[in-house]
Amino acid sequence: MSDQETAPKKGRKKNAEGRMALKEHLVEARNRIFISLIALVLATVGGFFLYDDVLELIIAPVREFGGEVNFSSVMAPFDIMLKTSLLLGLVFSSPIWIYQLWAFIVPGLKKKERNTAIAFAAAAAPLFILGVGMAYWVLPHALKFFISLTPANAVSWLTTDTYLPFVFRLLIAFGLAMLAPVLMVGLNMVGVLKAKMILRHWRITVFLIALVAAMAAPGGDAVTMFALAGPLFVTFATATLICYLNDRKREKKHKQQEAENAATAGERSTIPQSPDLT
View: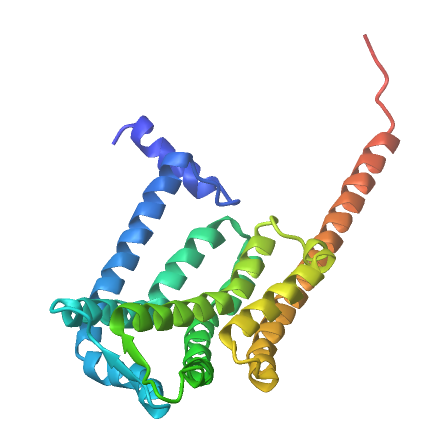
């Protein structure tokens, strides 16, 4: 093998900061997206076997409050089967695609920072599943409010074309909302997002969390709203604390490095110069 062929590999091995060329970034992104898609497809296939049970769980809250869900066309059952299986695949494959996303971010971190970041990212998949579970928990409360608006002499007939997309958006939105703190820590680890910036805009964060909780509990039930907002506040507060501690550690290390550089420069300036014998 020639020196030209071995040079790029040696360059990457010596690169302690984990920097990569744009082409290498694109190749890595392609590979990780491919792995995520394979996991999603396999999990979606597995979701087909749970379709009947999951669909029954989704429709059960409607029937509990006197409503009915009907298919609006001949192809609707097949379409809903695909969408339900895809939702299950997204949930079941979440540990893999979340890890692939995170692994694309952390290579540029130092070893200690990477270990801390990966440890926190390990909670990402459970947080996503927890968010989906929270959305399903609040679903009956939302349906109770909407169905209660039906006149006494009428019956709520919902179609799968309108009801199931509403449920799927609710589940995915809460799952992604619970992933936001993990994204905060990741951006902080790479130096993009500082804890001071998060604290400076804390009012916006509180407003957004309250807005999400209010949209998920449209019945005006304060207990439900606070029960949903509570876990979101806890995860955001934990992420902010981790960002703050990491910033302090990084700043302390930076000052220590500056002090060492200044001391080294001072020692060099005090070394007597040898006389010129020429």
